[in-house]
Length: 144
Image (cartoon, rainbow, N blue to C red; front, side):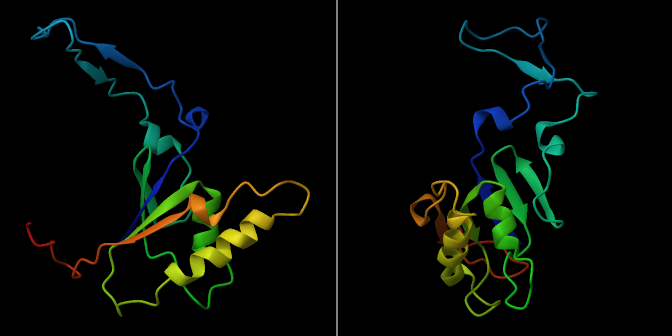
C-alpha cells in the first residue's frame, strides 16, 4: 500500500470537532492537559474527501492509498493526489514490484502548474518530495 502525506492549509481542517476536558482526571502538573473527543462527533479524517477511491486519511495530514501510478490509465491518480494537496510521496513498494512512478512526478507537476495559463503556477517540483522505503510485501521492516 502506498502511503502519502498531505499538508493542507490550516483552514482546510475542520475545527468544529467537539472535544472536552475531563476535569475528574488529576493532572500531574499544571502543564498537562487531558482531552477526550466526543464519541458522537465525526472525526476530522472522516469528513475530508478521499482524493482517490482506495484511500483514507490516517491522520489529518497523512493519506494512505493504493499505488498511484498506472501507465495505461487516462485518469492519473497522481494528478488527483497532487490536486488534493499531497506533496510528499512515500513509496513502500520493492524495486521491480510495480512500474515506478517517481520519474513521472515532474511531468504531472508541470502539467498541473501550467493550469489554464491565466494565473501564476501554484505548484513546482521543489514543492514535491518522493521517498522510497521498500518493504517486502506482507512483511515488516527489519529492526535497526
